[in-house]
Length: 296
Image 1 (tube, rainbow, N blue to C red):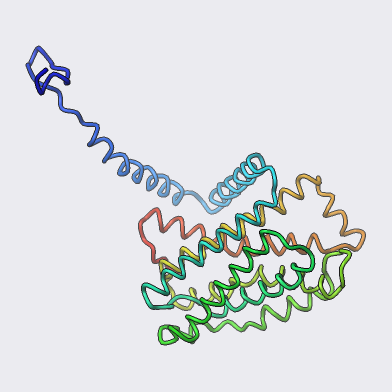
Image 2: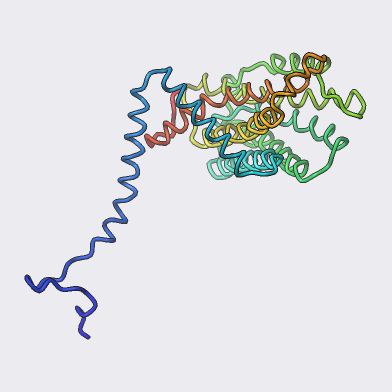
């Protein structure tokens, strides 16, 4: 068979049709990007109320999907810890290859290290599992990031932008944990420590957001890291929402009996999820437009 034997020939013209499958495969990403951009433009034209309704519907859909697909909901915390660790890997790449810590808040990392230490100290007594190992790895990575910011790359650290006062977060969390903590067959001090770590975790990202507001722009690697934190915290929030649904709201009824811990923990998770939700929205919006540096 000759070289044309494997191709269908149009006998009316004597020509061999030219395959365009390669061109089509090249055009698919372009078409996909156009569709995404068109969807983004459509969303941009919606009113604020419509945007909130769409975001709420997307959140509910995500929660339902997680509930249906994940049988053991404790995996949410493990997945969240893994995603947090992935965000730290992004920071490690930035710090080691670009040799700069611009856009990073040392104070936010210090709060993260603090709540991880407290959680590990109290959590080791309460239980030791795979999640504890992940938290320890995250703690070691966080301490390394702090070292890089404070010492190795201190010339690139803009201290004037990282001006959030830590006592605004630490003191209220400490006071709240003294009065509202979980009921468990353990020493009261351990339970107070655990509550303190939960409250502190919910607000630990505030210095980073404050720094980004002061800087007016966001470094791409920092944006990826904060987005990873947002996904991580959403998974933790999903766990609590599903617990409320499965118990048909029974946990909230415990407030009437003077047990406020579940309500406080749920609100703490909700606060940090909403704090990061706004950032995640603009992050996705900027990625669609192909602009990694976002105005804050």
